[in-house]
Length: 164
Image (cartoon, rainbow, N blue to C red; front, side):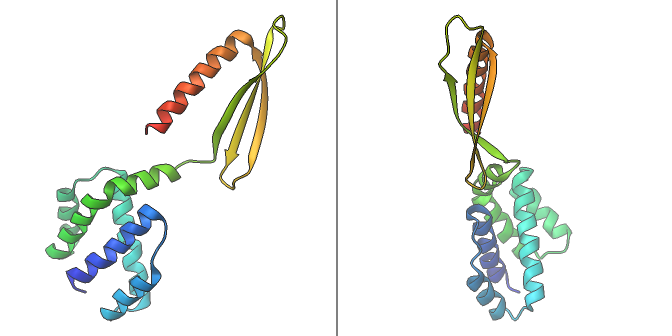
C-alpha cells in the first residue's frame, strides 16, 4: 500500500476519532484501489485507531511517533505521513476522548429549595442528566451553613471541569 493511500486511510480514521463517524464508503474505495483484503483493511483501521488514540492520550510528539513506527518496521514515508496527521489531529482527538472518558452522568442544575429561616436544615435539589438523555433528581437535606459551602464548591468544580 502506498504512503498516499495510508495517508488517506489515516485521515479517515483520524476524522472518525474526532467526529465519531467512519466513512465506510471512503475506506472501502481506498482499500479496494490498493487491492487489500477486507480483513486486512479492518486490521489497518484498528491499528491506526490505536496509534492515534494512544498517541493523543499520552501526548506523544510527532518525532517520537514516527521513530517508534519505523522501529516497528513501517516504512519512513508511511510513518512520516501518520506523524503529520497526528500533529494536525491530536488536539481534536484529545478533546473527543476527554468528552467520552468516565462519563456516567452530568450535573444539570442545583437548586436550594426555599425553607423556613428558623429551620436548621436546607433542602438542596440536584438534577442529573444521564447519557441516555434521561434525568434524575436527588434531594439532600443538609445544614444551612454546609449548603452554602457545598454550592460554592460545586460551582467551582463545574467551572474547572468546563475549562478542561
